[in-house]
Length: 262
Image 1: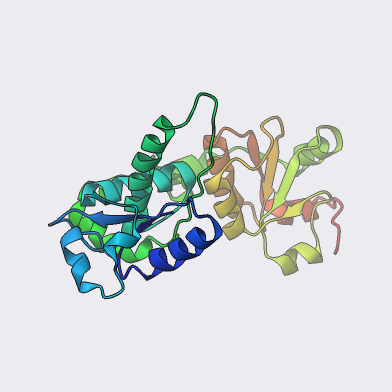
Image 2: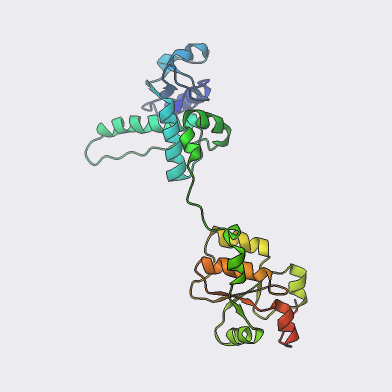
């Protein structure tokens, strides 16, 4: 067992239990190097303060730096989705080094398994990261397209279809029809096959991914055909073939075309 030493209670309790069950098990303590800061752990020189600490209990005590703790945190986050804290990061880095040495002692073809248990809470340590690795918090992922990126000019240029053309497409091409009005208005009367997705929900869906098939045309409708143009322009920018109904449900109703109630 490999564990970071703070109060030493966890490593002592777990190590003692494992040795009782398997006399061949080892307990390795991980501390920070003198002068290094790793919240939740102690340095080698500070362990004398801990009453429960017994140096002879551990088969080995290894040390690491603040930089290694942060590198371990980054690796766990980026490769495993584990948002561990500094002691978890240091334990991970130190554990890998110990296991590399253990691997060298294995016979040809021999394999052993290792289990790593991480405390998954990093948000408490943002100040620590900001102080010791400020460049980490300044990094940004590539910004995706959002609805707010669409200009008024682009919205005005969003393609419209007359109610007649939309009706023809529904009968022949089976497009995806999105009704972004409120639920009550949708239930009162909507175009057959239309899916009710509130505009706020639609924003979240299309900003976070590509939820619709690329080979399907998308028709967006609202009450009078104004709000829908913004979403059509956005979907066009995302690579979809999208259209707004000219003058919306109001025009569809004025044409006498069928509306379903729900």
